Image 1 (cartoon, one colour):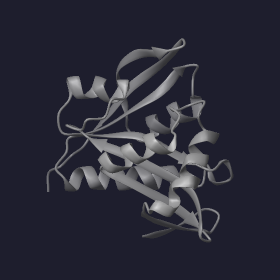
Image 2 (cartoon, rainbow, N blue to C red):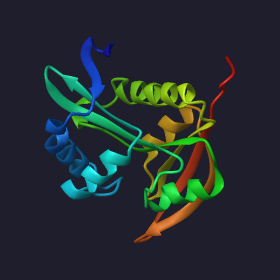
Image 3 (tube, one colour):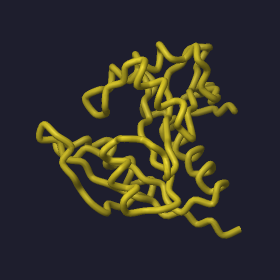
Length: 174
């Protein structure tokens, strides 16, 4: 699937390929301050259990990715487990990572639209995410507010970091 975003950026959104792994690990490492680290073994395990793993390409270069998990997965993330203990029928957006050069062009919004479409096609009731509030990730907090997410809890995740646990209800009525 392709999309044109501002300013006339031609982006191809496609499923993950094994050849994307190195670039994904590099992109993740660039953003590790606001998400958990990945090595190749952890990434491969998560990729196999994920329900959504897509990348964004510009001119044949992978510039971002999304990874998401439905409920009832064996995912050991403390934040995923928090949602799994409280919700059913959800899609947890674990991470959306974009190269700094391609942020604020609507690509994150497009990834979220794709996640919502997948969740609705499967009849799921919720999108779930966490956002850092200590230290605060102000851009992400504002983004999720605009996307319609609401906080339902908070938790510490180690080293003094606190996250806001947020959901977006999905209307699955046809």
